[in-house]
Image (cartoon, rainbow, N blue to C red; front, side):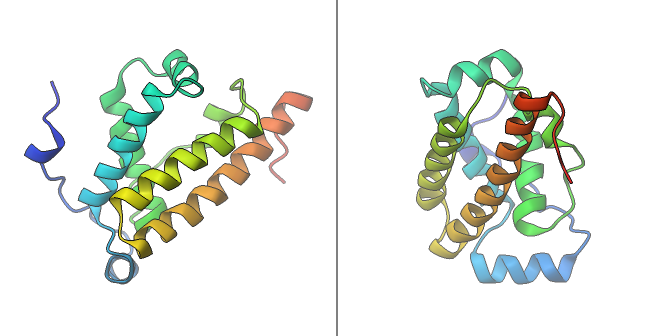
Length: 152
């Protein structure tokens, strides 16, 4: 059983680039607890969302490990910690999604980020979310057209 968010504070991530991570944290106000809150609140919304919830429900049956991976992912993306070691494109490229799904995902993410993060932190993660969505859109579109994404 997982503990409520308020009862546990994640340990700060050891960074493979400590100076870069410290600079980003100072500039944006982002840290591991903030990213943990962002990820948990965002995916709470996703699970309840009539458009995206059913898609996620077909792929994710055990949410705590997924949330842990997503916190590590956003720690790597936002704070440059190097905590995430995975390949998100293959996991997404055959999902039954189109541009409207990505737009909706971004809208939910942006709204959640603005509620959880400082303005600087929200801008930082939102910009990265747009880059991620752009890459995944291309991979999904290519996979749906040819069966193989064009990553070149």
